[in-house]
Image 1 (cartoon, rainbow, N blue to C red):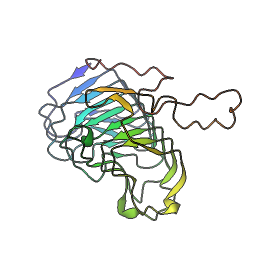
Image 2 (image 1 turned 90 degrees about the horizontal axis):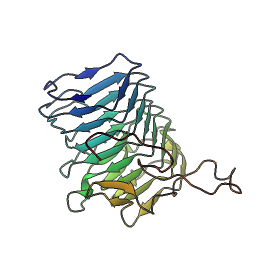
Image 3 (image 1 turned 60 degrees about the horizontal axis):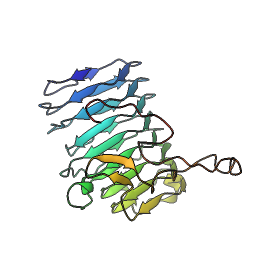
Image 4 (image 1 turned 90 degrees about the vertical axis):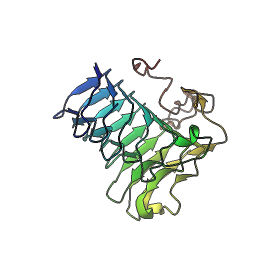
Length: 264
């Protein structure tokens, strides 16, 4: 189902939890404020598309409650320099997020809140489209957001990937930071982040060139810098019988990501 002509303010799509939003598109033309989609808690959002971001004031593209599955979605040309997505203790996996060249918000676009699982996503920041100058922050983790998990994500074109507000001394903000890759980013993890805020950090690497086939041209498939290069938690257990590692980014090679209409 395709949704257009959303109201200029207020929440457009509001579900009282335990719903399914699959294969829909949300055209934000004319929606200058308010939240686009609020699925409540324990909902499933798979294979949807958000586009034509016209926000000029506060309001979220997605306000998810805890326990949601948010997978295989596309958030296209995010342009309002404000918070964009709350995942709130949900699984945020295999999504593609692209940002307009004018996007400058340094606070952080995505807020995982507590216990968020952010895995195998592709974040294509403003530095990819503005001539190469990194800008904005991808993810915000403040003192009250604990026990988050980030693995095998790809980031390109951001001034800062992880913004730990005020260089937090709060413990256990990130339980696991594993197998992520980034290119053309000024900072991966905020400078001066104390050790107690990060429990486990392994195999996070900066790339000297893009990990995507043609990010600026709209081809977000991984190239050989990401394919089978991700962190594999079972590598030690299966070292003798299985050496295949997962692919980094949203378009992983061991799952079928739902196709979004009008995009491919």
